[in-house]
Image (cartoon, rainbow, N blue to C red; front, side, top):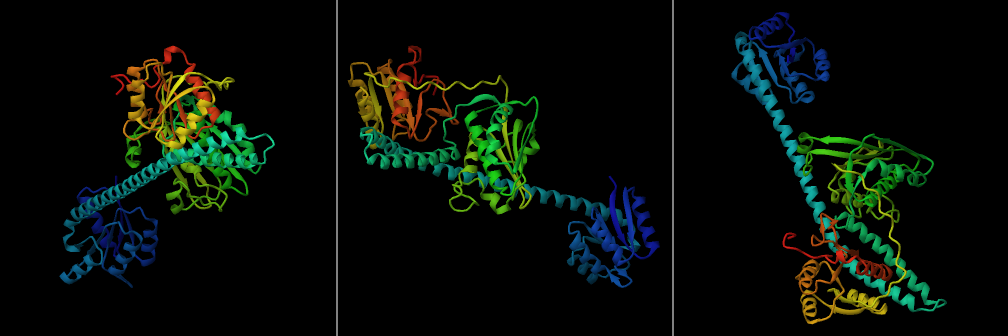
Length: 534
């Protein structure tokens, strides 16, 4: 490719000598000659130059002034003086002022060599600068990922502790409510307690989503179908002043994710877009098959290259500045007025996308709207339909023997009270050692093990495995406010496991107990670990 060279010289003979010197060395170049300060300034503003050559002495314009102007407007372009006799002091002054090199007019045979070296070194500097920028950007991405991971661990731990407390608050409130007469004035107060605990439980669910500690029920699914089915609900949500448009790519690839969580992502992003367009606007939802190549992966740390399905939501709203974008996915960060939002909407989206193996990218400018793109790995297979909701059990009572293992005293007491009130014989244990001791001591059948997942010492999964060696008839129900790798793999429930998320109501607990107890005998291997399962 020909070099674009700007040559500042007022003498046509000098211009021709420079042209011949470069042509003699077979240099492919496009020489543009200018003679005045004004023409030089106009040319510099056009940019796109590979090199600048300049005479030192010009009428009413000297070389150092030209150099200063070039350094201001084209700081990365090499600048070479081509002048008459240059003394040592003048040459040093040129270089200190920022010149790349100099060539005397009576030694133009050096010009091509000096030009090639200057262009090569400029290209090397450019490559180093780009590499430094890439390294800085990747380091910032890594710092951000580590920060989000640390916040996630904190949020998950908080959610775990709160879910135990909320299980006790909501459960005992429900027990009190059931014991009160229909016309008791205390019922209103108890119901308010239950409503408050439900709101708190919703917050902890969002924290679990952000910290990627939800239990997902992933299915192979068609994202276009989710958007199409959900569109009717979004239209009234955004109001009449916002025009909803969809651009769904035909033949879209399949993804594996939790349909309910993907709907939550679309809902949260839609609400955010609506709030960013108080005077109306346009919301566009797009889907597309994309291939993220090695070049993309090199610029986005922790993003493996490969085929993805993209979900993008773009609005024409207020947009946001760079500082806001740097914090937008952090929990409890919000730009809304007090009382207008929890700051967990986008944090929830971030956690769901990451836990689903995907990545999220945001672009926004103040006054120019926002685009959020989500990339979820494309999978092979056949889209699965949603299972119909299971009917609630009408008969919640039972007479089976239940071994209850829970290290949180309040939760253990609540679970025992609920089970015994509905006819079950309950053996309770505070930890894994006590549970195994009771299991070995009990000669009769233990029909069900209800165990917390996360406990000091041995996990609930390990307790189930060891108890199964003594009581192979025992079925298992896990419960937890914080998922662990003992029952999930990247947040997806392992096949054949029964799980109840804390906090739970008495009715939900009893329904799940009966569901597990009434499951076919072929599924008595709930929670059983084999030598091959690790």
